[in-house]
Length: 209
Image (cartoon, rainbow, N blue to C red; front, side, top):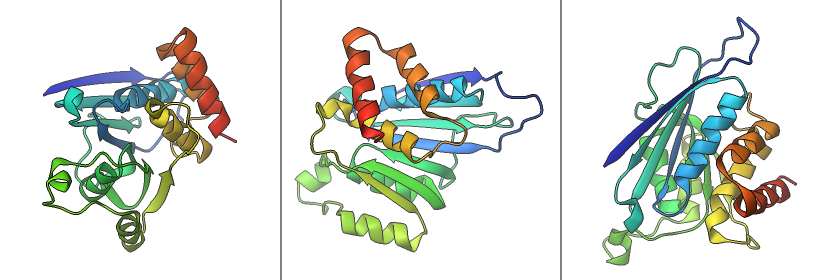
């Protein structure tokens, strides 16, 4: 297991403008691009002038293992780690991971945004557990007063752009306080170049409509 942390201290807001803490829990399966999505969110928050801290936990990512990232934003945040069921926003790149993170990380009344695809866990493939359905996910969201945003783009150019589809959804719905479209674009420009940047930026812009 590898844990890496990044800290950004924004300096573009007006002096005395204090932001309450906001916690984001991201999860996906190795190879889906959860690390890139986390880094874009971190840098976008930094471009917005916010104090932000983030940490990644990589297990057997290259073998389809779970990847988790945590981000905390706020002037009085001293650790990037989120306590159980204290996340304001959960971002998941797979439906089973959405259910797991919602139950373990997301607070009642929080927001769940997920890409509606399934990379079946081993227990499901072996018949030891049932596949998580959209209906069961929605029922739990209703019970806990969680705002549910499921994303599925049928004409997405590449499966590895599902993380960008979620990013566009996050931007479109204004799910991260004080972070706006130009901040996300600047962050993408920081992290990508040439053809990768062009394709991802085109997808991001198209899905904002």
